[in-house]
Length: 230
Image (cartoon, rainbow, N blue to C red):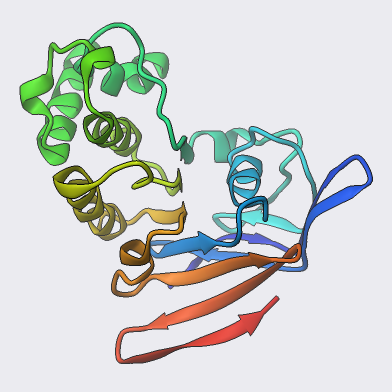
């Protein structure tokens, strides 16, 4: 696998308090990672920093083999990185308009937007909700729409904050089934979560924030993981 994102050092502080100080972060293209840690460890903050939504001190940033920075956030990453919040915001329009919002913002022709949105709705199993009011949908339906809205942008790096939180039963299983498909499509997917089923997905590597440091476990489909501390 090729390295998609590499950061030599990443440090985030709130005043005098150090949230995390990571000596090395490396993410491979076409691979899934789960990011774990106790509440308050900085999982969501790390995702937001990688998405350019929060600032941090960063050294030696390389994305897709190009040296860059996180501040200001580079156009190269802005076009390639998508962040999905634990509680996705739904615009008061329709399901199809929500999924196509990013494509419209990029100035894509309407016919192409419609084609891509149709394919994304079929992929996420929400085609029957095309004209529905998003405010009336269940949590599971909103999460699948959010994943479709992200997928349609063809991200190189997809950051998911607790994608199965507050979901149960069929809704949770439906979201779980979509994650491996995103990876097979070539995206690097990083999921902040506590969900044991997400952690146990085949081929998923585990990143754990502990006391401000990042520990990594490389998944091995034929055997146990190996703990590495960076």
